[in-house]
Amino acid sequence: MKLTATVLSHIFQPLFIPLYGILLFFYVSPFALLPVSLPYKLLTLGGTFFFTALIPGLSVLYMMKTGQVSDIFISNRRQRTLPYVYTLISYLFWIYFLWQTMLLSTLLVLVAAGAVVGLILVMIINIKWKISAHLTGMGSLFGASLGFSYVFFLNPLPYFLILLLLSLSVMWSRIYLNAHTPMQVVGGFYVGMFTTFLPCILFTC
Image (cartoon, rainbow, N blue to C red; front, side, top):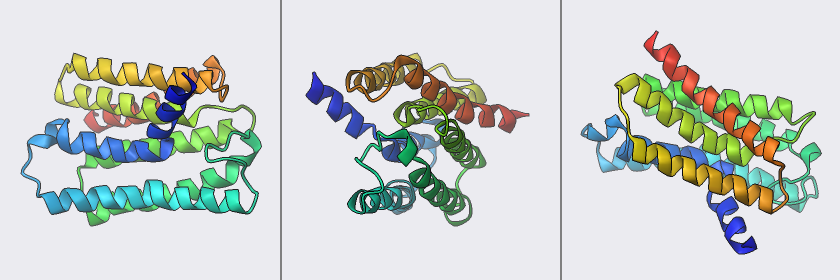
């Protein structure tokens, strides 16, 4: 059980969530029907990995080496602020990359900006209360899927159920590993969900 929980925590590490989101955008969303070339997709995925996973991940590894953080998941709440700041800066470059370099859909850029707002909220909340970044990421995916469904009048129930099941599995893993309380994982999920769903509502206004 511990191995399963650990594997889930690594697979759905918050730094990988934007990459999963771009994959869903290209291959599951209505935009999957557009004739987009493979090099364009690979460049977008590569840039996303660079700005949202590689750079923040290397900063965490450096801080682990220098003793500023204790582990890869930054379990100690008081050690999270600086890694969040580095991640936020890198995410801002990511949004610029999607918007100005890849010229991606305005809707996707708004959702990505919503994810950045979610990160800012998590960073602020973390000052006083440890909230789950894992579930903020999962909530972001779920909120974005709800938002796209709202914009394009879709009802992909099987897709929602799969995302919900994965989110519940990650919730269980974080609680089982004593990384978070139930309130912390649920709070993280709702922060992520609302910050990516609301930009879709604004897009239609």
